[in-house]
Length: 508
Image (tube, rainbow, N blue to C red; front, side, top):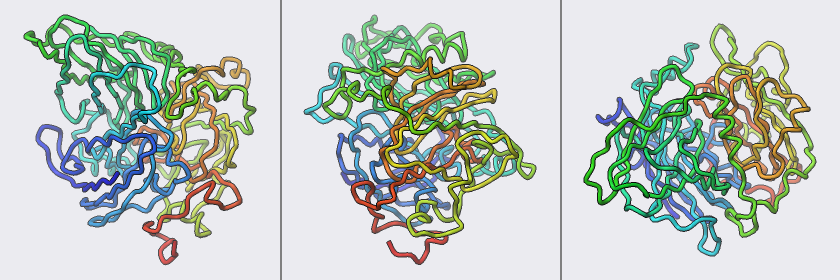
């Protein structure tokens, strides 16, 4: 599959200020591929700043060279291009792409990436009569450059100005009475969770970030930053128009975006109050999250059932506890993981590792447990061995919800709990049918535990999906490594690799 994309910045009147367009579109083009498709995408940067796209949830098997983040890739200079080459290997589901550089994500540049199953692989539901993609996120009137300057000065990201659905303040999705439609819903915002609902209709959850799940019915769904899910909605109500609503969660001021579900034979405009958001907050949301379960008898991208991998019976090789915090370093706000705030090097750690370039990163810069010491800055990289089976606990001792994402992997979300985690909390883990996903929420003053099978060699970004926190340091890289360099474990460096920093002058 060959795609050529140009990225540029223009003013669109129907949204607030300048937006980043891809192929003159905001949001960018929807990429629709089939499992195992090879994707060749030429990205031409017409901005006045270096730029990268990352592929949120795409595992990039053995291929962190194509991940599109600053720890693996040099950014594409203005008026230049880079051709990504990767495979949608052994994945199905609803994903997104977005800019990983600076605060470009605040101006757009994002789009949907939907991976469909191969025809020989069954799916655990009937073929929908239509397929809608909804990219929903908070939006700022302030330009991305001004937001970046504000963060650089030591201020936190402000509360957003609004919420957009597919870049619009009002969209319409049309269908026929009696038919069933898939809605693929992604949170592409910078900082804010939202709750999604459709007036008069229930939603059957069928897929979460590539996992086929137990098909429960919901009136509304919480979707946190960086997360995606898919629901089936049957148009089984009287023919009229109905509200679709997405409103911010856990915020004093509630911002709401609306769209319209239009029945094809409707003669009645939308009316009545918006469907109500949940009255309860974090505990309600945590309880809902616990209802998401793996469909053990269903396959995903492969023919074998998801439940054939008995993750709960595997002995973990290591436990890592990651605590986020807000700290002041040199008088400015930074966000840390285990007391370390990440700073980008002018040389991506992946290139420094490959070319054995010293002085870029060290593997003792961040520890696997909270330190309790003074906050520091570093280009932090944590080592992991290929084929490790890790228990990772995200500990949130702050009063704000966190959203954590790991590139190159998905993980089993086995537990949520309030307070501080300790080993006794393992008794509460779901070791039978926890779903796998690439982004998980951690509730305030609470913990979330995940299990990860480290089967994908490379340099992988573990980050806050809340982009202001990521920008100010709440991230690091996992170096998943085997001492034997082999194409069986990892692909070689691309011939078209961009070189920067201390890597300039080396030859791939």
